[in-house]
Image (cartoon, rainbow, N blue to C red; front, side, top):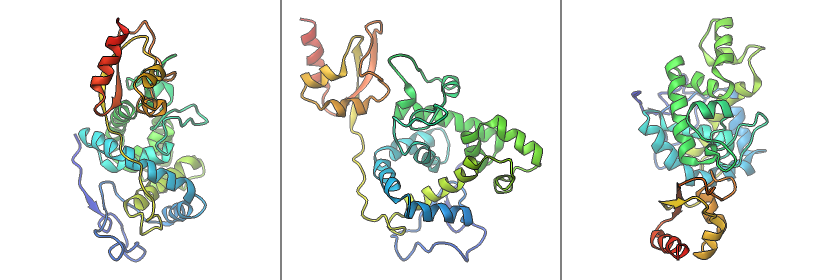
Length: 290
């Protein structure tokens, strides 16, 4: 377990001159549990999110209300800074269906080899990279391993983006473990060069949305569910229809099920159902046995 030290915005930065002044617009000064640097690259992405990227950042903020509480709790359980949950924001915009050009999938954008090494199942009927609980647990384990390697949260996030092999090679070549120095080198990948500033800008805006012009954003309602073990052969669409549940509501609770179906070869599988629906689900499966 890592000891997490909560940092105020002012403690984390080297200079007071250029800091945003939150106190006049926020009921309390935001707190952070990763170091916050407010330099030119971070300022650029703050401005970008507030202007050209405002439409999609607004969408991210709406979704964040649904996922951040769960993701932050999972990270805390692993002894990690909760603000690392914003990695999922810049990786996927909190979308289960997000797919990158490198075929990374899900909330935390796992490629297949990394996903397999951290215990996520992927086959014809299931892709656990798209499950918000299982993928977050896998991401927490991966981030924990990366932090053990680097002892620095910026390098940890950079390795999450570009891979530790490539980062290790650049650290060795340039003889520095300072992310900002590395990011200025010509052979440092642009995507990762932007990655940390994007992450920090996302954290800053999300912690004080009103200050940055996102005050009227209404967040999505958090998921409210319970678990139920269902037998193989279960079709979520038929199940939803029989119980007068919107199909979309049930499939969104179970994004790992690629076809909203559990093969008959599977004995049982744990799914999420709307809170309070256990009696109805039980009655549904009892009726199928008649």
